[in-house]
Each structure stands twice: as C-alpha cells, then as structure tokens.
Image (cartoon, rainbow, N blue to C red; front, side):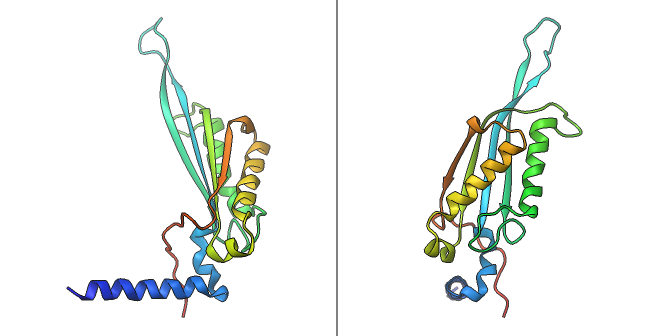
Amino acid sequence: MKMLPLSAAAMAALLAGCAASPELVSCLQPNRRVAVEVTGSKEKPPAKPGAKPGRDNVMLQAMAQGDSAWDPNGALLKAGGQAELDKIVNVVQHGIKKDPRPVNVGSIIITGHSDRLEAASNADLDEQRAKAVQVYLAQKGLDPKLMFWEGKDAREPMPVTKFCAD
C-alpha cells in the first residue's frame, strides 16, 4: 500500500528534474501549444416541407503543439501546426465527407501556453503564439471578429505524455 505514494513521489521528482533542465526542454512539448475551440452550428434541413430548418450545435477543437508547431521560445507557427489548424478550417468551411454542411461559427477561442522555462524568459510568449494562430486563421478565411485569444503561459499545463530520455 505504501508503494503507490513512493511511486508518485519518484515520478514527481523525475518530472521536476526534467522541467528544471533546459537541455531537456523537449520533454515539455505538450506545454508548448495553442488550443483552438470553435463553437457554432450547422443548419439542419426541415423535418417536414414548409417547416423551419433546425440547427445542430457544433464544437470543434484543434491543437498546435510541440516541436512540429513551435520552436522553443518561438512564436512563429511552423508547418506542422499549420497542418493541424488547416484541418479545423476545412471542416468549418466544407464540412466532412458524411456531413458536407459548413459550420456557422459563433466563436473561436484561442488559448496559448508556454512551458515554465519559456515563461520565465519571455512572459508574453503564450500571447504571441495565440496571436500568431489568430492571424493564420484569419488568413485562411475565418472571421477575426469572432476570435478571442488569451495567454495562460505555464499556469495551466497539460499532463506530460512525453518523458525525458536518459
């Protein structure tokens, strides 16, 4: 029974060591990210002739994260991040194969994050990343008036799924 707290303490020590070491910043990739959440609706054809069309609520999410999307301490959106965002833009504009109706966007929430080390050296990096995503989505045709962004630096980290190498 006492093994579980010991295991948890060992894991915390491993992660703390990883988080404190600049050489191993790649283990913090999940925290170098921008999350995008699109809410809206799709028009539903009327059930009966002459009836009003209905609406289906829609929520889409995308994540531009890690080395494929961002350089450490960088706010320039890389090709891997653009590819992830292009998926959500395509669904908004063209629907999907089974449901080709476009999405009537209500709002787009963009949340930027950075890891502890980046936040210590560049306090607005999370906001710069969120703004870069906003600009990219606007260039792709989404309405910037519906976009809201915020930066959360390292205050709301994602669970680390990539661990440091020995």
